[in-house]
Amino acid sequence: MHNGLEIPPRPPWSPVPPLPPPHSHIEPPMIPVEPLWEYREVVRGHEAGLMTTDELNALGADNWELAGVAAAGDGVHFYFKRERRR
Image 1 (cartoon, rainbow, N blue to C red):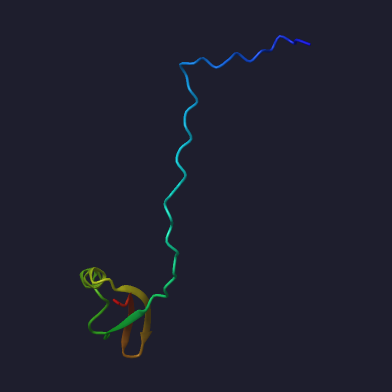
Image 2 (cartoon, rainbow, N blue to C red; image 1 turned 90 degrees about the vertical axis):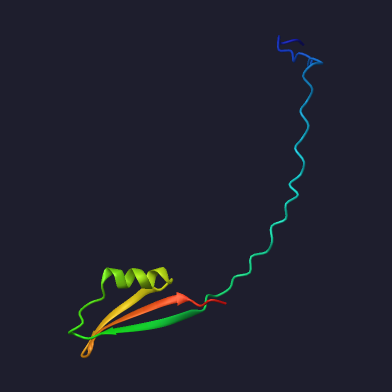
């Protein structure tokens, strides 16, 4: 039975492209390492006022990150943290 649909033969000038080579890169295993932190406290008395932008930028340039601020009777306590260098 012929339904009029024929698959023409593949012309000899268009070969089947070769398959790409198998992926040979091996991913190294991930080993999670918990960070070790170091902390720094800066206390500013009432007469000294808050930390300036320049002071905060200087600490940030040394990788210190502001982690918290607390007001106390003796002034304002700024708490910084950074990852400890191994």
